[in-house]
Length: 233
Image (tube, rainbow, N blue to C red; front, side):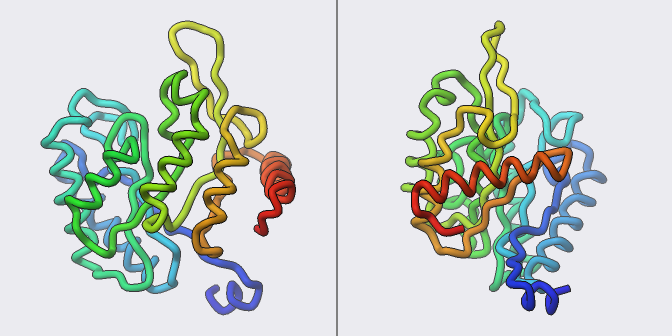
């Protein structure tokens, strides 16, 4: 597979480690940590840009909200767990990264920077999905400012990004839906311009779509926007 990827100029962007390593269920937690270690080993072996997971959740839904997700104890648990995963592999070619979520750390540039400092491992990197942290109308309408600020503060650590879009509906209380790139309000001109300042191999992945046609539409929109900005993809 790696030989074929090299022959066709394919860059391996991420190895997913989707699981809940901060679960309250200790068996689930230990199993998830072991899985993350195994996936980070794979990412290191194949030279992927990153191995990525979310931090998890203290609730029943592995990727969902819980009252304790923003506690100091949960922050410390995320630090301890991430260190354990990285220290088991000691990656040199890749990094372990946490995709941001609206209801667990890291949920902002501030909390991502705090985790980088607390984890204190060169094998920890940044994954950026701006849609995942647009959780209020204020951020929705100013998402370009949020994106620019995130790149300014965390750009050197970013190894991979996800491409989605988001749409606010006029229904109480607040309804924000993920949509195909180009159908929402995410400022792709700023997103692509800031991404273009990083290493040219920093990757951008379109995700969560149902059909090849949807992916083609999303790719066409992103390529068109990049072309208008004279940004090579």
